Length: 268
Image (tube, rainbow, N blue to C red; front, side, top):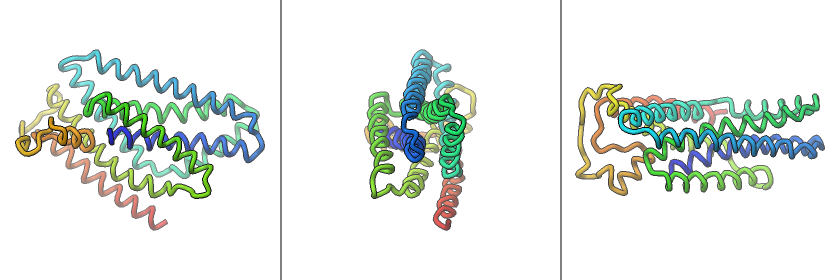
């Protein structure tokens, strides 16, 4: 639940900021009459995202045996790759400036379709990312908890976005993204480890050593605490060598890079 809440909060806040920038600029240039166009793009993007999410989840439910392991393994690795791209995408501030520039161009050319597309594709991009992340979270922690976490995160993101644009007391977005980057690194490492585990089971990747340790007698990965750690950090009480190596290598490399990135942000 925590992992899906965190991801939904981050992705939802991205959407809220983008839509807020567009609506704020329309107010600034006294073009509020075009706000319904932006909202139509927003709702169309949300509907498309739900459709894509439904297709992904339906595919996962239908598969069994080796095909299921392959689907889950590649879905985990794809989610980890996309999450890594999100974490290390340095151009967020440039992204927001670009959104305002594109809004200006759309208004100068009187192109309502451009405003619609701007809102639509912003929502679809974040929505597809969220759908893939939630698919991975659902595989490891269960559907109900994932859904509750996602809804809570999106609702929180809505109010956080509203507070950012309406309140005198602004949210410290830089600190927010810096802290969530660190947490998401651990979640992404868990996705990598779980993905390799599934591909081990499918026979695609070798285990090298079936179990390099087994601490399930101390903390079983099927207990409540074990399932919690599995959902959040990819905990496995008896990992294979390839799984543990992939997890550790990702955590080490990505962790060092995100710390370097945060240090760079603090110095700017």
